[in-house]
Length: 321
Image (cartoon, helix red, strand yellow):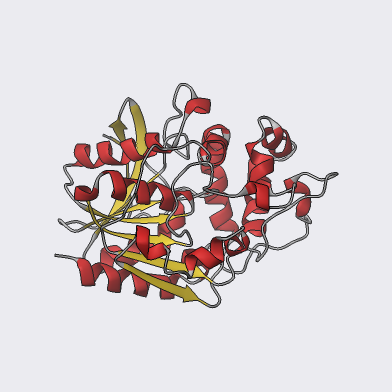
């Protein structure tokens, strides 16, 4: 392992860990046998868990957050355009093996939740419990996100088109791209462009950042995406969402907590809110607690950190053997 020096949150230790031929950036705080592994979404990196890592460590857990391959300070695979979700699943399991961790609590956000569900389905013996922020049970495949039931300018449809997001993002500096996506994803409606617009055109440059997201936070994200770029991020999740993972009759047997922000734009995706609130969800995740936070948005762990931390720690303590 190579120790990194980052001027962010000095109590957190940063290392590069060799995993399946790539060096992954690993941030951690806390010690002991009770381990929590945080899996970020987009446009995030390990830093998105800054509030949760400290709280979980203070509660007696070893908190670990990674940058997925191709994100932040982790290395980019040789052929990013061939990446898929199973690459992330295999990375997580290999990382646990390398660190000598037998079982872990997984906490995921956005596509990090999809990865966590996959790990729990494929490797149930490695998962003590699972917390998903805003994502009900779903696996990659043709019906993962029903783009066909969304408007033509739906951002996922746009970003799945080879070269389109690259051209859109390439007009701006990385910091502005991250700023725009955070503003868009903090809204209550799925970002959708007209035929004569690109997704980045949806944000007025004068729009302020959300109150809970500082310029310092933005700078932290931007500095890491300036290193990694968006090449792998556009492949996983967006361009690999429709690749079937080949799993039949999937079930998450680990105890699971789903924390939803009632103002999360994802609930406006075709069928998502109904599925999230249905009994059908428990067919896939039988041991499920499903919580809605009225003022929570897509970044519920950042816009309501105290409430989310309390829910997470209570869940961990309840299911920690």
